[in-house]
Image (cartoon, rainbow, N blue to C red; front, side, top):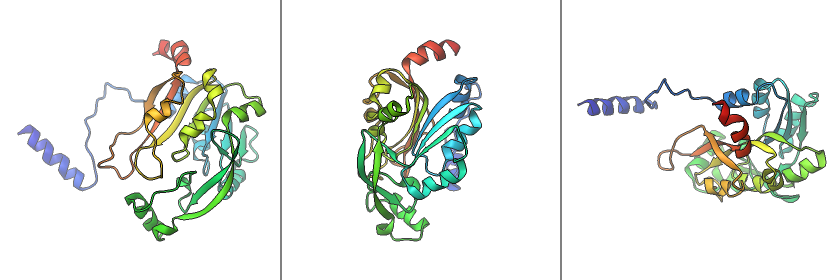
Length: 262
C-alpha cells in the first residue's frame, strides 16, 4: 500500500512538472562555488574561462574570489565586444577574441542564433532540441545556423608559454562538444600537474555532429586527475538534453592539500 501511495503522489506532482526526491539532511552537499571557495580560500587564483559567451562565468568567479586573475576566451566577435564593454577597465581580467583548441590554427566556427550553442561542430538536423530552439527564436530549423566564421585557435599550452603563465587554479571549459580538443591543447600543463581544477560541460545527447563520453575526456587527462564532482542526474531516454557539469581535480593536489582536510 505504501509503495502504491508513493507512486500516486509522485505521478500527481510529475503531472505539474515537479519531481520528488528523497532528502538526506545528514549529507552535506556542496555546490561547485562552495568547493572552490573553501579549498582555494585566501589565495590569489588564476582562472581560465574557455567559452566566455557574455561573461556569466566571469561574474560567477568575481563573487567567489576576492583576489583573482581571469583569462577569458570568446571567439564570437559581437559577444566579445559585450565583454569588452563590461570588463575592459579591469586590470585583473584579460579578454581574448579567439578560440581554444588542440593547436594554433584556423577553423570554421558555426555561429547559431542561440549563441550559447555555437561550436566548431555543426548542430544535427531533425532533432527535438533543434526544433524547440528554433521555435523559441521563431525561425525555421534550417535557419538556426546564423553564419560560419573562420576562427583563430590557440592552445592553452601555447598561450601559457607566450604569457609566461606557470600554474592555473581553475580551467572552466564550455565549448559545446569541443572539450576534448581543448584538453588536447594543454597536455604539457596537465602532465606537469600545473592545473588544479578542470570544470567542464559534457553533452551526451545527440545535438551536435559528434558527442563526447566521459572516457573521451578522461583519456586526455593522462591519469593525473580524478573525477571530483558533478551537478546533475538524468538519462538519454527522458531528457531532451542530457548533459553534466563535471569537476576534475589534480591527484597530487588532492592528496597533498584536499584529502587531509576532509
